[in-house]
Amino acid sequence: MLEELARGRSQSVGQSASQLGNRSGSQPGSQSSGQAGGQPPNPPVAPPVVPLGAPTVEELVRQSLEPKIQEWLNANLKEMVERLVQQEIDKISRRT
Image (cartoon, rainbow, N blue to C red; front, side):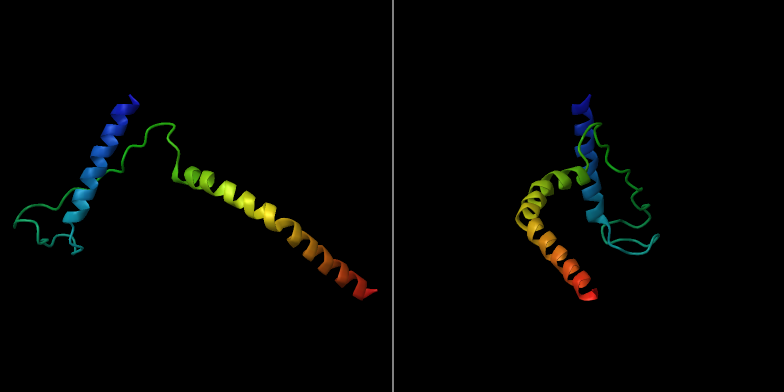
């Protein structure tokens, strides 16, 4: 079943790309350079079907960024916290 959905998705994506290539950016109802006179414009294309359980773009980005963010935090967090704590200590000590 997932293979059928993936095949349908790749076909609809290919159709979407070819239809996008045929659009000229002109106003609705006007003829594009690739259409013969009297032909109706291409119908709207439905979004591609995503198989159930497939990761979203957000999940993929999160997975790729997490190790980099963790590495940056390990390298910089201690110094940031120490600097901010020292600034607060200096503020409090100036008040008294």
